[in-house]
Length: 388
Ligand code: SF4
Image 1 (cartoon, rainbow, N blue to C red):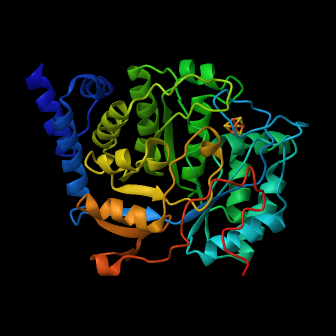
Image 2: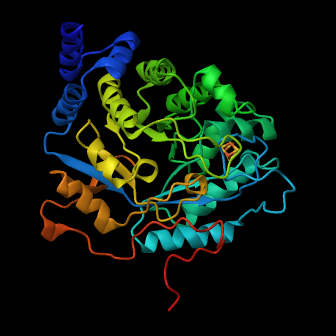
């Protein structure tokens, strides 16, 4: 068995393709250090300068009203619920303006499946943001929002994608993937579209030049084989389109929702999954760790398991933090975390281009205002920049 595992690790470390069965064997049986070393070898060959990237963006929610009622979600409120809210375009633009003042290069506009929000709503929203802040990349929504808006407006997926692209959508966030295989998906989100439909939207978008990222939420009771199956489903689409820029696994947060229970993905399982993902996705360029859900220490360890990106500081985040994610960060912490892992921090844009490489500590950014805020559920105005 050891020789078999060694052979698979060596082939994957050299950039070769591994099968689902081989990925599952590595995930469950490979020695931790050997697994991490192979994944890190892949990262080194892809990014030999040792640069690890981060992003400044703001996740802005336009509504928490949603008809889909996913069991794991602590963010949504059913239509007519007293705690349901929507933000008008003026408030969204105000938040975009604050983000720009703090150096953000991207906004992630996301919200519930509001029963009235068809393609027209998103066209209006994206065109308003693009007109006011053309320098902001709109890396937003997910396939489930696209399926919902197409249904509300009575148009095809393709029409919806083309119209929101024309209105200003730059790329699609990988949100809503959760678990793509049918069994675990139905268990946690019975009203959500299937994993196959999620991938269908991504494939249509990729064919029309709208790229995306792909996520995975682990820890709600899925099996090891289902975790690998989730990745295989994404890799199959990537073989055809090449449109996934990054894979981003994160762990289920168990507070304030209907699923409850504890997250069933330990830090060790998360790190092993990260390493297997780096070895499995020979056709996806970037691998992002989720410090928001696993904590900054585990995020830093992930840098030794194949990760080349730590994602955003998240000037604002309310969806995952509503379910209990309490880890916050700021520019100084994230840069320190990368540098103290022996890597070179660099701010990137949505396309993963380096905007500023902090080659030495003397190059480190100093803006103390760039920090995570997760409070807009309580304080809907959420001013990030002092009025004085
Ligand atoms: S995860 Fe998204 S689709 Fe599901 S209930 Fe929450 S807001 Fe609605």
